Length: 443
Image (cartoon, rainbow, N blue to C red; front, side, top):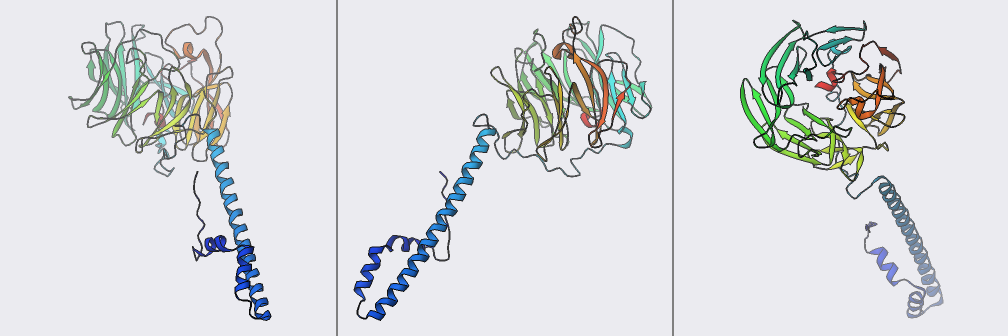
């Protein structure tokens, strides 16, 4: 139990009075000094006054201790109601304060643009004129597909096109110049590419499976010079993908560390996040986790997952190595998208609700029913799909998000979270296969 100490100007005065003062003690003093009735009366009056003061101080002390103790018990009970285990809600996993540095600095050009693919080509969508522009011109093919795309900066977009018909695949890395509207091959990887993240248009990190050593190698490529950053135990799994799976590699906002996860990489069930420095050191490993995203340079948000337990979002602090559960009671939280201080996610339940949580105020800002797949486009606007449950034979293609979630997108909506204004996006695809790429969720 926590100890409480009441301080006074004379630390010994109250305890001494409490120990020595009693009715019998007063009688002994009166007997000793009873030489004059008048003097005896005076001493008795003074002693009674002292006794009353002592009683008053003691009473106030007891009341103060009671108030403090009750408050302590109330706080402990509230904490106990929030925490699920002894390790939940550990104080100290604080995120960076929301300053102007944390607010996404979206260039004017990208305030109303997002990018998407139809597997074969990349398109740019303009929210103002509601038009799609095809950026690449690859022939439609069932044997090749675009597996990754990323906005590198205001001038360049990077993407990977792989021939999936070839054993262990054959992938080409492209840089698309948004100013000249031209694409250029910068590298070819004749192996099973796992993931990629661009630092700039000439420098990137990619991971690939090594069938000889049976592991995943994470490499840094800079002007055709290769440096191995990390080796992670791994294997190619033949199991079906399910909604808890995650395959991601992304740089921290300051581009000093890379976040890596592939839940297929260790005999098919490696639900672990690796944080790797560009110097080539694994600095952190987060167990029983999936679907991570950077919040800022010091904090990562992820969904808790293990064979025994799944649910809730947690924030991991790279500085003090502690975790804190996000103050949300929504257990089934997927596809996290972050723009400080807002965190969006959705639950694939019967109603498929989408939530926007303000971590600065520790409050739920918005709930949207029958909605999923959120992507921030600016500090005010978010894009998401209005969905319904799949009907018979509608969601049978294994490996697609429709199969995993059993949800079909009927239309896409852009919404201003402050004014509440909503508008439908005119895209042809019922589901944008590689999702929606915006400035916010790419950098």
